Image 1 (cartoon, rainbow, N blue to C red):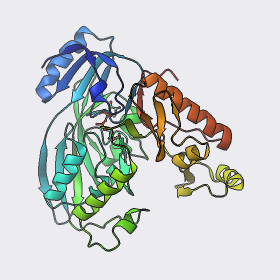
Image 2 (image 1 turned 45 degrees about the horizontal axis):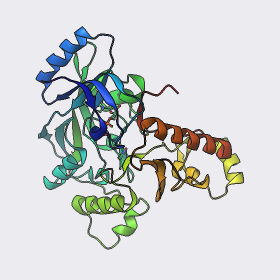
Image 3 (image 1 turned 135 degrees about the horizontal axis):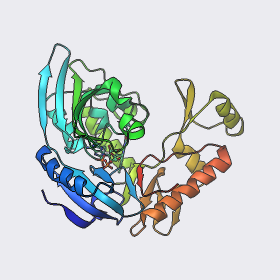
Length: 339
Ligand SMILES: Cc1cc2nc3c(=O)[nH]c(=O)nc-3n(C[C@H](O)[C@H](O)[C@H](O)COP(=O)(O)OP(=O)(O)OC[C@H]3O[C@@H](n4cnc5c(N)ncnc54)[C@H](O)[C@@H]3O)c2cc1C
């Protein structure tokens, strides 16, 4: 396996940000790990970053260590019982291609997660979710490698501590585990989730099956979200914030139309709505901006640097905090941030 030096990551992140990896390699088989481990022994002081499709990353500086692009390929039905089929996918598989492949095999469960960019291996990192379904709803287990000891370990659903856009891998032990493969448990008797705003209307006169729902989700997403191949972005840039019931009462008193959903003991607000109310939709500073149809999506109009996008994001955070007293949290992994 070849190790490159001073490797441009511009084509490998969906923001289209120019940043260089001091070292870079593309991991297609687990055997390739030997070369990376050898490199590690020679450069113990340098950091390592795993990269999938780069659709949830913002590089605001060059990366001083090794970027390992994970390209492990595999798609396999590994077991089957009365109620479920168990399907295993390599971390480097394209997520959407894998979802469509499961549908072509006649399996359901992942259709609402169609067209989310990126790879299978990154999907557990933030427990990807869309249109009322999260990865955790159909997750069985994953295989990971401890980067420090080369120990292989299986993680069950409980081990992964999945939460809203969060997991053990994202917030408890970031950077420690290389996810190699993920196994899904797909229901043989699916209960369709189509009650999400926009989806039910789209499917009103249709006979439901996984392919029809997937097609609808694809069409809805294409009508709402910018295509990274056309304009650089990382999808939603901020998580929907959670506030206490008391905080929400105070916000509601001033902003009666503020959309909200109960979430455990807390209240979830719409980050997009909060940002929109501060007048950010379609705003632009240089080549950094918000998408004109969706204030939650930050875009690179062409030549923005990661630092400029990050600065723009900080201005949004400050204005939402000033108006609503709510602090927004970035969803993508910001590489090189000091704040
Ligand atoms: C247009 C658009 C729409 C989007 N819509 C959604 C959406 O609806 N829902 C949603 O949840 N997300 C959405 N996203 C965000 C993104 O697609 C997901 O987070 C996706 O899972 C990221 O996959 P990736 O392979 O590109 O990961 P990367 O951006 O390459 O990496 C993300 C994180 O995972 C780590 N990582 C990557 N691969 C591995 C591995 N094999 N082992 C260990 N760590 C790894 C990285 O180090 C990094 O911390 C959207 C993004 C875009 C651009």
